[in-house]
Length: 184
Ligand SMILES: [Zn+2]
Image 1 (cartoon, helix red, strand yellow):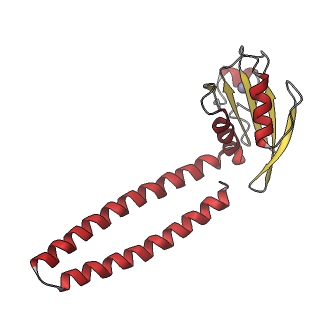
Image 2: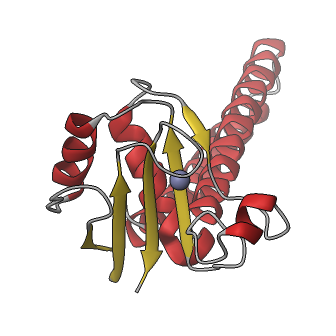
């Protein structure tokens, strides 16, 4: 789901929430007006049900807002690395992500997409050795073509272009599958 799609669904959800709230209030008032003990009990039940619904909905909105903020990180590169993690789907564990600028690996390799210095880049490492089939699958499912180690391709997401670099062979910190993403 793109950023604008998420924002649109959030807006739609909020308007639906307002509508539902109005409807619930109408029913609660109607029951209250009955002025009987069953009417009062019904109103109470409705109110309890409404607040439960409202609480769940508030949680959903908070979660979506957090998702949106997370995917906006590093010029939207985080949305792409999250997409890559979903593609891998637990077949290999994530062994590294963004590293702070002061990290020894950031200092020794300042141009790395992992380095916190590079604000428009994000990277993800997977604990799998020489996994060329997984590397090709990631490229294909992102909509790119990868010819081999260190090769990069460009994809479009939410109106931005990102260059994606994949290294499957052993390099740097030992055997792992590296995917670096940078908004260009
Ligand atoms: Zn890496």
